[in-house]
Amino acid sequence: MSDWLISLDGTSAGHDLALVLALLAAFLHALFGALQKGRHDPWLSRAAIDACYGAMAAPFAFFAVPWPEPHLWAILAGAMVIHIGYKFAQAMTYQRGAYAVVYPVVRGTGPFFAVIGAGIIFGEHFTPGQWLGVLVLLSGIFGLAIYNLRTITQGRDTMVPALLLAVLTGCFVALYTTYDAYGIRATANPFTFLAWFFFLDGLFMPIYVFPRWRRLPADEVGPLFRRGIIGGLTAFASFGSIMMATRLDKVGEAAVLRETSTVFAAAIAWLVLGERVGPRRLGLMALIAAGAVIVEMAG
Image 1: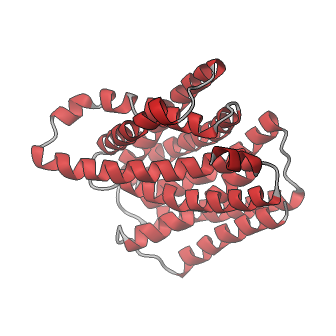
Image 2: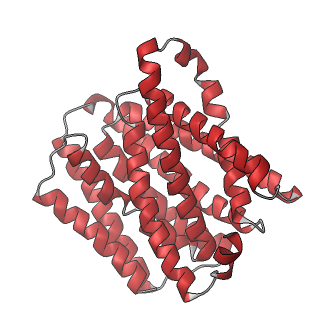
């Protein structure tokens, strides 16, 4: 399968597949964020998810894919450092702010810097029409965050640090998007990078939050790890999809299209978390979708 995917690199079929993968990653990432923001402590939820996807990735890393080339170990080590920083920033953000407010800020900050990073690292350049699409998409995302901030009363006393942390988390999103895209292009088999990434990435958080796990009531362990298994499978599909999209096509375009996850997140907040969605939020979500379409059509 890896040979077939690599053969699509730079082709129109590869572009179309990258588009589908980026949109799939958007939906799954919104679902992943809702899983981490659910009833449990975000630190515990994140650690359970990491433990589950690390355990699931281990047999693939050790037995199913080629071993990493020597130069890839240093790249994987750098990815671990970046993702640990991202997880800390994300967990602190979710601890302090309402999901419907902080999630759009995270996802709005990420693509802008990811597009700039892709230009520096990969020599990608957006057309004026694509930059217009980025501005339309970002106006919808930040407009959604501002609207939610005005209407949500929960956690307003911690909202300022939550928003600052959300911007920091968005910067980490841009950093890992461009860095991991470099990593998955640096190996002959993209599944080698993905398998070893998930295995190594699943080690740190479970160890870090182990003292919290020990204080968890026994009747909470089962539900937490059921969430971890679902989250682990979601992470495989979400992160794997966006990484393959960056392997097959432009990193900047994939990063922007993934931020339609804000639309999916608002739908999840409405359908699952019971938050109200009115005409203004629907209009802002339409603006986000329109920006993504402009980026794709103007490319």
